[in-house]
Image (cartoon, rainbow, N blue to C red; front, side):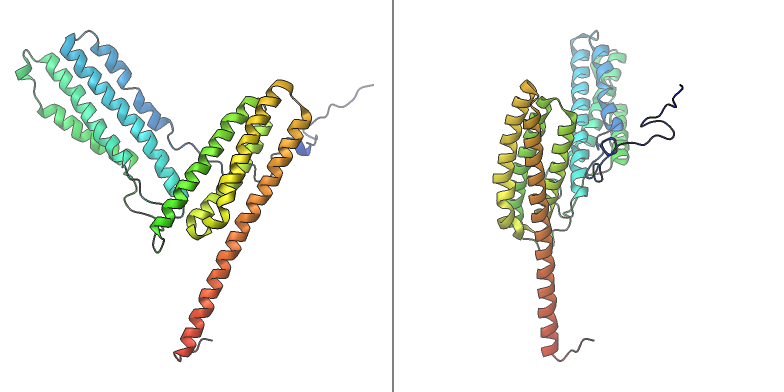
Amino acid sequence: MAKRYGGNFSPEGGSSDDDQPQRGQFHGARVEPAGARANILFLPAIPLVFLSLNDGAVGMTIGLIAAGLLTAAAFLLREGLRAEAEFNTRRTARRPAFPRKIFASVLTGIGVAVAAYRTEYLDAETAAQASLLAPILFGVVATVLHSLSFGLDPMKDKGMEGIDTFQQDRVARVVEDAETHLTEMTDAIKRAGDRRIEARVERFQDTARDLFRTVEEDPRDLAGARKYLTVYLQGARDATVKFADVYARTRDAQALADYSSLLDDLEQNFAARTRKMLLDDRSDLTVEIDVLRERLQREGVRLD
């Protein structure tokens, strides 16, 4: 007897809950800021190197210098775009101490100028006849176009008014160490070879980063959150390293269940701490408003 085909992907078929993306699964996902338009700037140095190999000692040296400058500019641009993306995601942030994108534009202009001078040098009968005007113009135009294409670095702090810079520096150091723990967790869990548990670790990391951002916005919360950013994350990292080693060898289902349960407990505790901080901040705001109202009333100002 014929039987109608059905399944998860058939027109009338349903799908199980495991096949559906969990709610909030992509929370915190970010696009790589240094995309193709930045990475493509690594390419011009490659043909320049090969074209310079048969140009004699001087021509080859000039070509290699130009290729090195263009490659360094591409590296700086990529890091500058990432730093700018991180700056934009935070409510409070300091401007980059080293303006990578600006220096990338300058290095690009210098690299283009040196490459153009190489052409002038090869075309001239003597080194003294090589013109500097064209290379300088090419370098200036390349610098301007690079700056217009990728913009400049953030030139001023964001949301830093009224924030104790000393406390902010303390928070920055603690958060940097905490991010190191998360990076080590990511590197370790890859050894387990299970994409599902890798995604589970990523969701925990998103929850932990929510706590990071809350502490950064109000450095006074550092005292209450320090054990979460140090002790708990160190324990999570150590547990991840041990689990990855065991699971990669044995594929023990019980070890997987225990580790997943640990991540659930950690995520709940981190989320609860973040909510408590937000509630405390709101309570502080309410107290400030009440104090201000009382002062206004003592001054004879009546508020409806």
